[in-house]
Image (cartoon, rainbow, N blue to C red; front, side, top):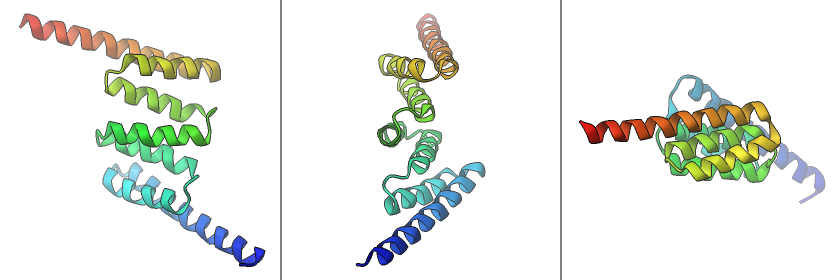
Amino acid sequence: MTPEESSSKNNIERRAALHCLNFGDKFIRERSWQNAITWLKQAVTIQPDFFEAYCLLGEAYMELGQVEEAIETLDRAIQLRPKDTNPHLKLGLAYIALHDWNAALGQFHTLRRLDQVMAKQLFDKIIFSFNYNMFDSLFNQIY
């Protein structure tokens, strides 16, 4: 394959992946999570290093309660861009959903080095969720 053919193929793949990302984003805005997942999975199949698609895919998985899939997907996004705060915040929220407080705090510590404001947002959610869980558990034991 000549360099021009390779470049043309890469350009076509990039455009196809962007097309899939746009449809995935459209379905997220419509709250059609399964359709979003279908399109976003296609985007990362076409372009395995597509950071934005992994972030949106993690969000869609979380909305469907597929937390393990969200964690795996967000981990991949972090591998692609370790200093981007968005997947760290979303991953922290996924760990909160699993009540994995240590892992959530791990994301807080990472965010604290990257962005103090986002770190505080995650910390507040950790504290609220942790306290709510304890209160709910205590309440259920009493009644």
